Image 1 (spheres, rainbow, N blue to C red):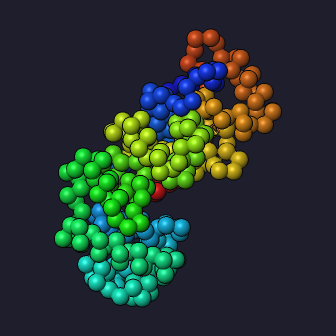
Image 2 (cartoon, rainbow, N blue to C red):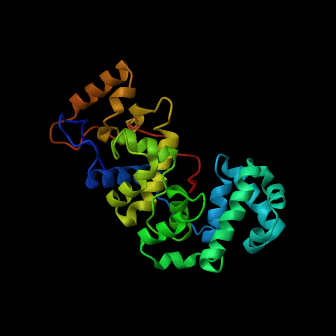
Image 3 (cartoon, rainbow, N blue to C red):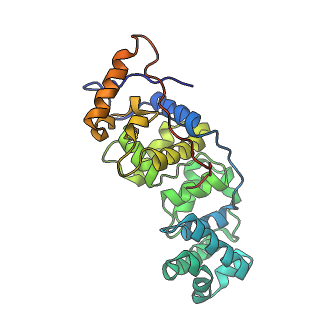
Length: 272
Ligand code: SF4
């Protein structure tokens, strides 16, 4: 297990993490929460529809809505040709059906118009930037949705920054405090090696859900706390004193304080 350095955020230090430090956080978190396996997911157009269904709802509800949609219509070509109220009825269990039904129909018809078919597997052969740009021409497809399709369905090194990843990145100083979630996609694709994008995605989500929570993050238990400029902001005086004592006990030149214990999740899933 990799050891951590002492907290050492120097005055005048760069505001954001170097590529090497980001790689280190990925290694440490993957060791903590992983290993992760990249299971085959839905075909790209189905993944895109699923992404729309999963907006502002739980994974359970969006899965139910997707299954109902495909039971009702069997193929996405049929969904593209269907009347909006019929789609709305099928996806009702996912919530926000009135908004999502026309969105799904519109995006499918735009794919047909641009591509002549609903098969988006050709994107895999494109350079990442071009594949992203192609998807971004579709109505309602932003950087996160494009990243999900390219990364999860096609196995490309695209970023898909959700609220957990964004929060962890900001707190760790991986991105600057004023960088928007949309802009973070391009920045992180530069800073994370392509072969590490999947581990980055899943480990940062796990970390955001389990430890670096929106409210009351568990900083004293954090495995990347030694690299985090926000840690002291969230810790109590007692925790800070304990941390200082631990750091004082760590012999100079050693790898740092021992890795704190963080409970393993009950299940490891590739949830967004
Ligand atoms: S030290 Fe705290 S704020 Fe920083 S990454 Fe860990 S849990 Fe989040």
